[in-house]
Amino acid sequence: MMQLFGYDTINTLKVLMLLMETDAEFEFVPINIRAGEQHKPEFLDINPAGKVPVLRDGSQHQTESNAILMSLAHKMNWGLPEDPKEYGCMISWLFYQASTQGPHFGQIEYWNKLAKQPNTQALTHLRTIANRTIQHLDDQLKGRQFICGKNYSIADISLFPWLHIHDHLGLTIKGANNLELWLERIGRRPASMKALAFLGSNSMFDIKN
Ligand SMILES: N[C@@H](CCC(=O)N[C@@H](CS)C(=O)NCC(=O)O)C(=O)O
Image 1 (cartoon, protein in one colour):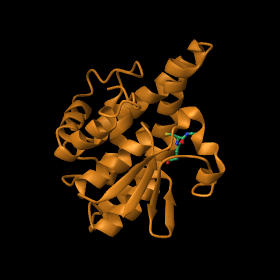
Image 2 (cartoon, rainbow, N blue to C red):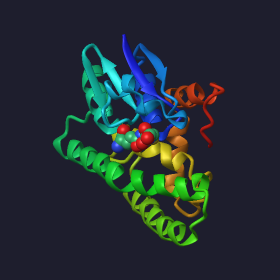
Image 3 (spheres, protein in one colour):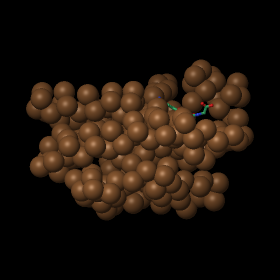
């Protein structure tokens, strides 16, 4: 059976969403990143980068959440567009998520919630970039149900979790109507609800929404 090493993190949520979409059987192995378990030798054997999530499938340890989404989608034959244009669109948004949305939203969480010393200058700067991301996504979603058209894909899964917790980050999506509808559309999917409940129902997790 596949094993997902993760915690109450955005990147873990992405993988859970896909596991639930595909009804895949898996065992969840919590790695308490707040207690430093990701730096223990036994975990570093699994991922020398010391990061979750990791999906173990047989002898393969797949790291990097968006790479996990790609390999799992491939294995389960789910959500990978056949149309080359749509496939290209999906890849672009996966890279955009990993290079732009993820790092900036992650920094907002740090300065907004975790840092011992406030840094309003950093927060203002990061929120400006995050607002551009919100606008960019809202524009992309104009006339589209999902990021790359009418089909729900791993690009949507990858982009959803940080936006789902926009309130927690002190961001607003007011006026971004296409994005708001997209969030609702994804949030209502049984698999998304299961994935959120999976994290939310476990007392060691405190993901905010
Ligand atoms: N690019 C990686 C980022 C993984 C990542 O940053 N994981 C965080 C939790 S979301 C982590 O394990 N942090 C612990 C640490 O860096 O010590 C991915 O998409 O999987």
